[in-house]
Amino acid sequence: MENKVPENMKLGNQLCFALYVCSKEIIRMYKPFLKPFGLTYTSYIALMALWEKDAVTVKELGERLYLDSGTLTPLLKKMETQGLVHRQRGIENERNVYLTLTEKGRAMQRDLAHVPEEMRCSILLSREDIQSTLSALHQFMQDAKR
Image: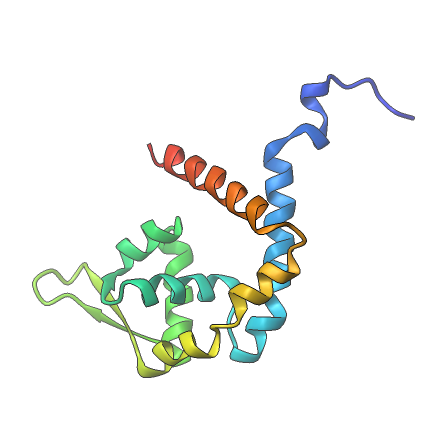
């Protein structure tokens, strides 16, 4: 039996639900590319951020990835155990923990260079649709920071 629900309360009309489902599905699509390297999607995006800018604090990385320290700390401990990053307390301020890529962490960039194109081919959208969606989402992310 279908209930009478106002249009603005229907699940299919909720942006948050569409983003949630798409995010889950895209992360699922990454798994076969990342699993052989022992990476999760979150460790992959952490590496991507560090490939762009190495030797950053945990706080800086968390801000770039929109992750809190409770999520980031266990992830970075695992990545350190895997030999991908090195964590070191700051000399002037021991509360700051700095991250640097190891040689293995840097080499992963070369090993995973095919992943973005493989994913683009897996997502059945045109380059233009992907670019316009990405642009809209970046705008949303900027607005959310305010």
